[in-house]
Amino acid sequence: MRNSKVVTLEEAIRRSGLKDGMTISFHHHFRGGDKVVNLVVDKLAQMGFKNLQLAASSLSDVHAPLIEHIKAGVITGISTSGLRGELANAISHGLMEEPVVFRSHGARGSAIAGGELHIDVAFLGASSCDELGNASGCPRSENAKSICGSLGYALPDAEYADHVVVLTDDLVAYPNVPMSIRASRVESVVVVDSVGDSSKISSGAIRDSKNPRDILLAKQAAKVIINSGYFKDGFSIQTGTGGASLAVVKYIRESMIEKGIKASFALGGITAHMVKLHEEGLIGKLIDVQSFDKVAAESIAHDQSHQEVSAVDYASGEHTGSAVHALDIVILSALEVDTEFNVNVLVGSDGVIRGAVGGHPDTAEDSALSIIVCPLLRGRIPCVVPKVTTLITPGKGVDVVVTEYGIAVNPARPEIAESLKAAGLKIVDIHDLAAKATSIIGTPDPLPFGDKVVGIVMDRHGKVLDKIRNIEE
Amino acid sequence: MEIKNALAGTLESGDIVIQIAPGDGLTIDLQSSVSAQFGRQIKEVITDTLKGLGIDNAYVKATDKGALDCTIRARVTAAAVRATGKDVWKD
Image (cartoon, rainbow over all chains, first blue to last red; front, side):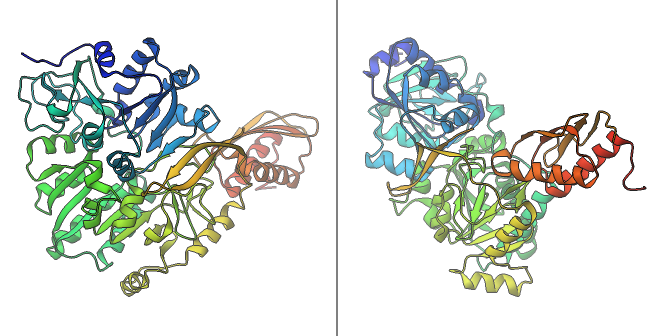
């Protein structure tokens, strides 16, 4: 084809004008199956680049090879929504000189759009792309290998980066329509063996639980939704990751059918459960920033009312038109909730980073009703605590906490507590939940934090919310 | 009291494996997923349980997966019964 942008990875990097100290970016739509970050950073190391800033929408277990690149000085700064596995453990123990900057998905989108997070070169994996750069997360030929569905987290990068390189493992005939990333925003197209292992998308945080406690929690959360006052025809809903919050959908379905209530839309990470309700006519539209499994990725490829949305349009706190502002109910998980209803979803009770900010603060703050579902204890680890290890979602945005020992309602929302009490649900004071946890496990000794700041948590408006210190063995 | 090698518990989450062997004085070698916050308490529970059973000399290797105190006491007691042959539930 005339004007083809297809080049080798090395040529694409050379053409991009990338220099030491610049910022490169990646999306995480392949989650635990991602192959783009390691492939590109290996190549950059081989080409002799140093001091690069890595701006990923999130990082997971599969990115452990970055440890060596950090030690070698190839990568000296990271911004991300999440960190897991060996990389997270090494960073928590002080691997990097510069702290990792954590942002929610909405905050990352608005930081990119507002120029606070400037991307020099974006390296974006796509399931299909034509020679001019029209790219999509949907399959467009029988050779399609790696399907991720929505490319929502890659769209701000594609829109605002100085230079965009699309990597694909399925180069298709022009025009690759409908496209998510437009050819006019793309400088180079690189064909690789594989951009990601789709079978590993629904790994990590996303579990379909058979755990009886998760099922109990999900049933309780469903009762909270149904009796909250927000469960009426035309309502909208989002579920976070975590076994219990995903299972809630199953239990509200029955009540929707029984009462003849339909949802106008479901938002966020879209799962097979949501697609099922949509196909049954119980949910009108799906607004999808990230397809959480194969079923969701297939649905977005063929269903007109299953709409891809960018991180900015999904959850920005700076853009009043972002979808979270129209959201009624969100169900979220937590590592820790404290007696002020503050939530931590990032740092484990051992002080080691092991999670992701995700859309937690965005949806909690802007939804009409946010429900946190978590057990009181995980083994000997308390989930309701006097004070969270790290502040991720401020308590003013958190309305209800569902545990197996009762439901706590934020005192700022007395009307919700009244509705739930009237429905016969067991409402408890959150201080009593924290005290119950302590009575079972004892008072934990303080964590051995050091003096080095290894992570900075930004709020939705570009201000520092909390700092994470290194942990000493 | 004569002590033989004995074991109780599993490596399931929420459980603890207690291995008892002969020793001079009481030595507890603890590996725990929650050692930073609960290591001190876990050792206390193990020590108190053994002393309550009249065991003052033993080497104990404990591999903990976040067990609660009641679980720890139960596993230590079971291991001690197997190590001494003295059935504290019957005798």
